[in-house]
Length: 148
Image (cartoon, rainbow, N blue to C red; front, top):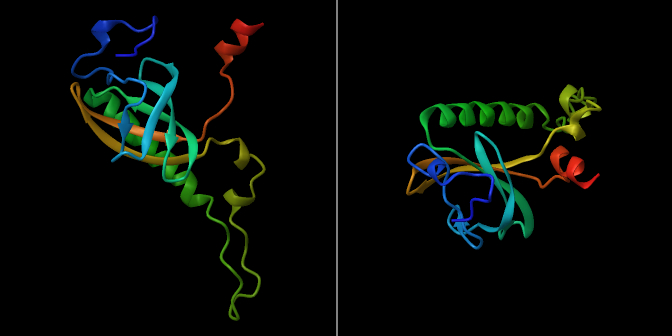
């Protein structure tokens, strides 16, 4: 189990974190774990390789307790709502030659919202975990503080 020096072994129990090792695969082999990116009270986050899209992604594996699952599902709903509302405007048609652009699609802040790519559930020794897949971002604030 690759839990890092900041996680306690007793957190890897039913309702807790999913034990992950480098090379583990998720979602029918689509995502392969490369290394740990971070952790929090709610989840661990891993750099993974997406074999379907041939790119690296951030794989967030949520603790399996019902309260964390519920929160994760709410997060997914919110992220899906952002995706749905940011759908590009419809193409012009003869009956509507100048359709209005989607407000979310044209919003200048849209590029500052993380790109949510996928989600699935993973059954492990500590029960079922909600997993979310995001674009990989840069260094986190703690990493910057430690660096400087």
